[in-house]
Length: 174
Image 1: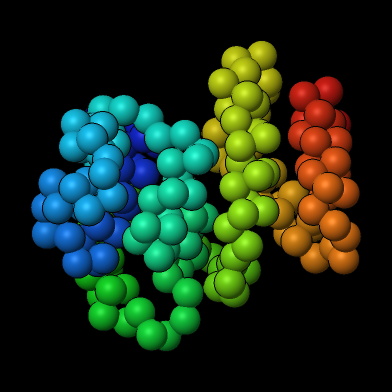
Image 2 (image 1 turned 135 degrees about the vertical axis):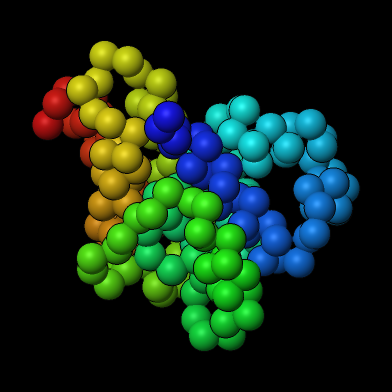
């Protein structure tokens, strides 16, 4: 029996909740006014998680959204999170093994607002069955867009235009 991407993310979500100090899903859901049934279904993999929720959960748990999506790289930024990282590693034994062969290029502080704009703009592509692009492939494209756009010395309006142009090229197969 293979594990789906939703189930894989769900296991990392549960590990992140525990690392953030929430022993029960109910405690977390209550603190952030999230319906318990919704969060529980995300954490068990019975309900898929969209891009906006990935960003929100990453922010609540102070974890790397790239790690939450893919399982690659470090779950936390910086050395001050060693205790929380140890909890993630203990929980990781049940998560599908993902070996990161290269240094994680997202160990720096991520501009969550920019990443959220990219993922929200890409959301229709995740649901487009006509694209010959896998879910992990599309996530990689989003992070490539982030890498490019985050280094530009441009106003957000210009960055948003570049994001839209890049995503439209994916639709055209470019």
